[in-house]
Image 1 (cartoon, helix red, strand yellow):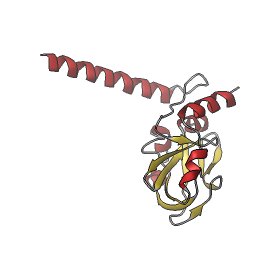
Image 2 (cartoon, one colour):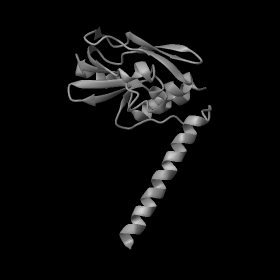
Image 3 (spheres, helix red, strand yellow):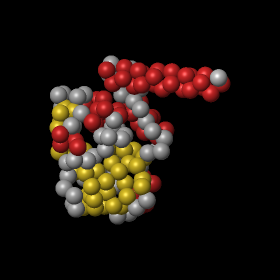
Image 4 (cartoon, one colour):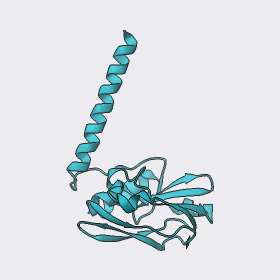
Length: 162
């Protein structure tokens, strides 16, 4: 009986979180707080980095996709291309604007999210998971130290809103 009660509460909590996430996507406003994950690093240009050993997965932040609105096209870089920190490697186009995407780290692009060619809205749906853009073999792991942690990125977003 106790196990059933725990499972019912867990299912209700999960449903509430799903509804909240859905509403946040539906009602984007200046008052909606952007999602910032603690285990990622961030560039001031609104890209995120997730370390995976000698590799880094890169995408645009929840804040960036919210500012852009509905993404309709993602210009993906070529696998094998060398990118430098701060260099534009692609473009995200939305119904409102087009924006360059800048590499937060240097290295060789070893993979791109080819699903974005057919479903660019994945960037809006899940910017930190199914909306990732590229995977890079790190050239200089020390560059990661110059990126913002979650708390500093939140401050950056708040300051740039004023």
